Length: 436
Image (cartoon, rainbow, N blue to C red; front, side, top):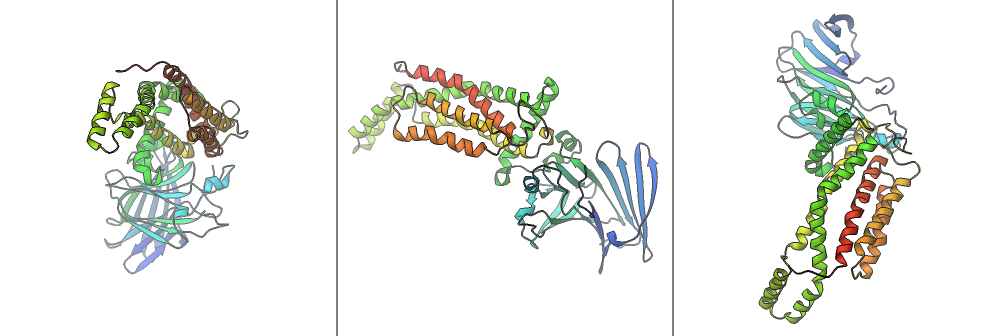
């Protein structure tokens, strides 16, 4: 996989000494190659006005990892090595526009969570400076990443500077980011990862590097933990069951519904009871509209008579919200999880991209309408409810039309798995009310 842009480097270095900055990418270096165990070592040496500069790369086989050690002779303590991250990536995806939308830098402060800076979020020439200590900084596109990590237990980066790049055809495909590392006694060391955003590989690097693709934007604090849990579960199911990710999503969707069945059952029954006592509530409100104390007492007696409380409607809604974090997590997971890239299932050539025939979004909309229709059976529906029965499927169709087919599949399975429970509740709703 060729990630570097034509005629550009993946990494660049600049040496900062008091009163001067030396661009090492313009200097002439001598290279030597050697072996260190299973690692291949390439060393670059240069003499810059009597100052010896050495950069040593130790390539770790089959790991996408390189250990880098820099040594500069005769520099004062207040000297720094600047590590320039890639200004962009060569796209290898069929939808380059969508791939470009994922271009971003990210960094991890030692005492806080990872932060992302999308190329499009920084105006051309605009500069953002984040002070250290920083554990790592990365440049990434949809599926691949170039990361520079401070050594475990070693000297962290002092800061990261991000500058917005020029727009090309209104697309933010260029940026600039620089990590600043102090030269301690003329030495600096760090680790470089250039490869796919495979979750297990990123976890193996430590330093919370699996968060190098921050999810969720302003709701990152909620989505990121769920995304991590979801991807761990899916990977575990994949390794345990040995099935394709398509079938894993089917099983995962059914499992979520089975786990939530008791909570949803309670929520649906609570909602059903609230609907049944609405006429009595309205009668009480009319009778005691000018007597607040009697109104409250009568309402409490009504709730007690039916084995309910004033908070029953709220408790009935909460279980409905539980699947939302999982759905949002999957939404972001499907955008950047390379494990799903190129995985076929049924008629989908790739579960990480949209359904080329748009069959699955239509099925999502159809099952949404069916769920609404079943949910209205046995109730006195008003015009607003009838309108929503047709409006919601349309909204779902528009929303899911261009979403990843795997995400559509998961939601479709969720709808299918919900139908039996909806039907049972509808049957229960048609029976006479039993007071608690």
